[in-house]
Image (cartoon, rainbow over all chains, first blue to last red; front, side, top):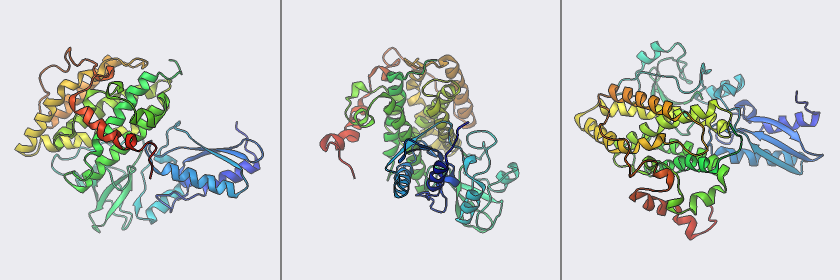
Length: 181
Length: 239
């Protein structure tokens, strides 16, 4: 059992309240990337941060933001450690985080049953199959704008590696989907 | 399995990821559609992230990437092959991501020094493999032109695929089992894409494990010149 002091809990709260640099509607706690905070003396602290994707370029900005916030709170020495195990999963995004993503216009990830992408059997000449895909999938990606379950995949990779680009077949709006990982 | 990192294994895996990442980055500004431009750049970014972790296990990532000569690189010859037309890039992706997914899954199941990275990266690579499979289906089972180009690309890169299953020093993996699984997976995808599995040897005496031994093909030197030029001309440059 890891015991946490009151100060550590307070610092964890502060580090977790830092907004994600790419999705500022989410905090790092809601994204599930702050793994722990350990005091290393009266005013020195170590923070464990895990990247969403191995190559996520936002990790450096997150580290700098955490260092700044904890220094402002009286810490003289802040070390942000990058930890890989256990691997981050979109299941680590909190319910509150999922709600905020949807409000921001991004379809939140579905809870993963297994690991990796959901296997789809798509036709060879078109990347999305609309209704066919929806009926085949008991847990479809819903449009964050109108809530429709009738959406199609436009591209497996969107503005960042963690998102796919989809389009709603009902309201015709394109939208990002936070891919299950 | 030992917990000490084998530098040669870290270099082999790290160089595969680094070199393919650079090759995919060459599509920036040239991809057939905007979505594909973004997809290839995102795959390249995933691979670059893996390369940074792996090369850091072997030494200083910048020195290793920017200051080594061609003969010191340990990547497979497959990943250094030029992008060619889009079909060649997809064939290279199909062959490599299928291999990398099998290898990372195998390493993730163990308790060696590469297990944490492999457990994370295997989920990213699953998307790379899916991307390559879907494009193989679309091009192979597409028009006469796309079918012929995809057939040619798969055939031309076939001779670089045997090297993937030469055991890597310091990596405890089931190479024979992986090769069998790779052949089955590739055969199934090509079949669904109305393509045949290429004929001809998957390796030769001249190329068996050659990339892993530091022997590379002609275009690799030119790729390295472009990749390393800025850092060598302006050491420590940043922006």
